[in-house]
Image (cartoon, rainbow, N blue to C red):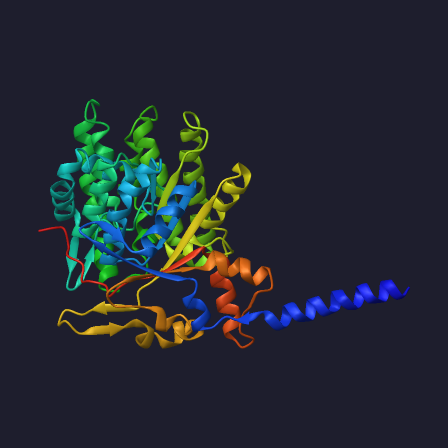
Length: 419
């Protein structure tokens, strides 16, 4: 009995000792999990660069959770392409529709013509209203975007389109649709029907720009001219029917965004990922896939009410006995047109206040990479404890959502790739 009491007392003592040794997660402790790197002439340099290279080498899936409309994001993605290719990554999943991914593939073939061909495409289909530009394919309308797409294709990447077709993609997709019937005897009739449908669609879009209606597609989808155009394509024209089907899916998601269509969108994205992944499995045992997508989609935990792409690849990696790495990103600073520095931590203080321990780590001239995966392990081992105040919730979400957190150097103004 005495020995039993002694053993129990020893165990209690060890537990209490471990609790005493657990360190609170603060800025000083975060520094020990943080490295830096720069990108010069397309080459990653510094200790943080080696961290990224090791991540890529050891992972089957890498998901980069991006800041949309960021020039620095384009710069790092361009620099990562040869590293990804050297580590066996052949597939590049992107936040555009399946047919838009096919179009981007065509525009980036051959790779050396990517910038010029994308410029011509964007010039033909972008509608500018004041300071706003309605682009045909999102996240590929700037010069930096064209450069990383060129690098992806130069390094043999095959594009997977995961998302719904973009709000303003319909005009170019209708041209693609009509091309599928160029040898059809009714081609001229289809062209006439397309012109009628386009005119009505443009009218609804212009009214939406002027805030005269609440969602163009709720009206467009009911237009007889649009439906007559779609009905003109033969049921045996598989390419045409696929475009029509995906356009209607995309429009319904936009129409029902107030009625929880977000989860339908995420399910559609997961389905597109798995369709491409299963195709790749026909020739490879463990296809390596790199995904560039908005940061919320990259989370491994429940995100905005849905189990998104980050959760999907984590599940696949667990099944395969491989690694899925998700990377979140923040933009602490941006260089304004007049050369001044915009501090986003200050500008959006309310959004970032629970992450204040990270703020001193950001640098204007270097990339910051924080190893959240190691912090997560330390928390689970009892070596680190999160703050007990309200920051606990946001910090715990962050640590369990991503494996690494990037903080960009001062971001640059993007340059549109169109006339």
